[in-house]
Image 1 (cartoon, rainbow, N blue to C red):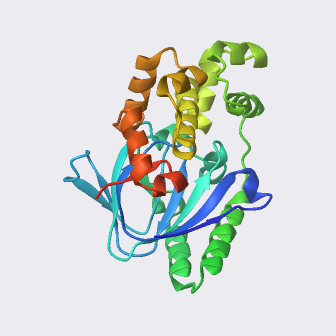
Image 2: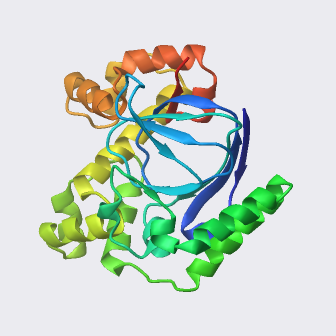
Length: 273
């Protein structure tokens, strides 16, 4: 598997976390992340399965937008797989898509539904590029062109998201509303519009990502201690939340980390043999 990660500079870096180039066939389970992504699939196809049985599926070709996921995705790239993946920051996707992000949640939407023929033009340019650096440059040019029509989100939303991302502490939504002088109902509307999910779900996704990073990079001595460290109410809440997002118990994921080295590099994708 070839994995190349590029960190964009300002101004793209303000809204895009990274651009990744991948080669290699993959079949497995994708876990929810904290932000949306955009994918150009340069060779063959990509299957999104309806369940963990890996039987019924939808075939995706060329390009798509992956909305914020709140449950595991069962996927397979096959043939001579080559992909360029744009991983947005939490509000970054809204800047480039200019559509309510809740319409993408738990969905994979073909990119031509957003950019019409321009998506195909960029896909063709990426296929013709002979080096990874050229592909990255073409992708950055595509993003920069769309950044010129920048539509900034609500300033109070930016502040609220920053609070949710500050450190590992999960502040109650009511406390965030009080701190920023905004009603819970309006904050919920803004988050669904500009992030894709409610503040409560976003907070759960943040905490889940902290769990993945901790387990994949430093084997915790006791999962119970980790649950309390990350402010879960108790071990049962921790286990249920983790299983909702992965289909696995925390201990099962930990065992996979020990035998599948790729999880240390990409903790949100569990390969399936």
